[in-house]
Image 1 (cartoon, rainbow, N blue to C red):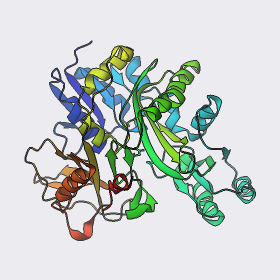
Image 2 (image 1 turned 60 degrees about the horizontal axis):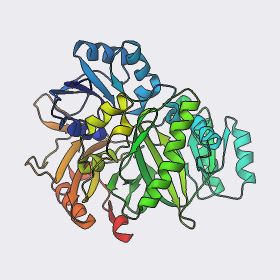
Image 3 (image 1 turned 135 degrees about the horizontal axis):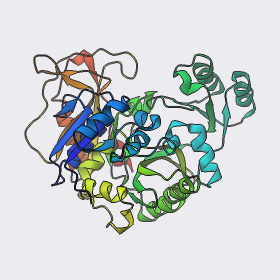
Image 4 (image 1 turned 180 degrees about the horizontal axis):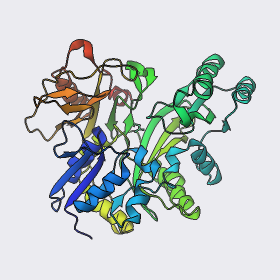
Length: 428
Ligand code: GLY
C-alpha cells in the first residue's frame, strides 16, 4: 500500500460528494479536495474536470491520489496523462473508457465476447437508418454513439417516434459529434437494474444491486435525465443472479478487455434490463465510472473501507480482498432538481431547510449547488441535491428521505422531484 494522505476527487456532482464522503472515512486520509466540487463538498479547487493538464499539475504539487467521477475526463484520457507523469489515479484509460464513450465499440465488444445484449445496427446515414426502421417488426431504441450526459437514449413506442429521434440525432445533431453515428437496437421490455464492480484489470469485486429512475416524472413518464433517484438493494435479485452477472457479464468484460490490450481498471457499470417474460438479463450499456445517483445509496450502505478496495485495485490485488460488506438495511436517494430540468431551468435560488444535524441514516449530497458571495447556499445546476436515507425497510427509507425533501426549499415554482422513488421496491 502507498499510504496516500491527500485525495483529489475530479467532478462536482452527488456521485463525487458521496465518493468523497465515503473515502474520507479511511483513517489515513488527511485532505480531500474536489475539482471543482460544489457548495457541499468542503475544500474545492477551481479546475474544470476536463482541464487535464491543470489537474495533473495540481495533483503533483499537492501529492494527491486522484479518483475520477465523471465520464468526460476519462474519455479524454485523464488516466493516460496522469500515468505518463507517474501520478497515481483510479479509473480506466482512454481506450478502456471506450466501453462508455462509444456505444458502437461497446455493442460490438459485447457481440464479440458473447455478453448478452439486444440485436443492433449502427448508422451514420439518415436514409439508411429510415429504411431499416421501415423494415423491422419490433420497437426500437435509438442511441447516440458518443457521450450525451445520460440524455442520448430514445425509447420509441412507434415508427414515427423512432423517425423523430433519428432526425434529432443524425440531422439536427443535438449532441454534436456524439451523434455522427447512431445505434438502433431492439427494445427489451422489463425492469432495469444497475450493477457495478471495482476492477483492477485482472479481477473485479461486485458492488450490491441498485436501481435508478431515469425519466423526469412519476410513473416513468417524461424525458430521460441523468437520474432522478435510486434505491439499494434491489431485493428480488438473488445470489444466483448475482453469480450469473459475475460469470456472464463482468468476467467476460475483464477477459475481453485484456485480450484487446485494454485492461479495465476502475469502476465498471453495467446497465441491465431484466426481460419481463424470460427473466433474462440484457446489457443496455456499460459505463466506465460509478453511476449517479446509484453511487449515493451504495456509499450509504457500504460498510467496508472503499479506499482500501481502490488501493487494492491499483495494486492488482483485488482477488486477495474479502467481499465488500453491506449494511443489510435499505437506502433511498431522491434527487431534487431545478424546475424544467432536463431542459431549460434557472439557477441562483437560495436553498433552505437542509438538516445539518448529524444523523447517520440521512445524508444530503450536493450536486448543482454553490456558495455565493454572501456564503449562502444557492442552486447552480439541473440536479441540485441527492437526499439519501437508510431505513430498516424500504418504506422507512422512503419516509425518511421524503421527510427531508419536503423540508428543503428554494421556491415552490423553482424546484421539482419525483414522488415515487423507491415505490417499485414496495411492489416487488
Ligand atoms: N444513473 C445512470 C448513470 O449514471 O449513467
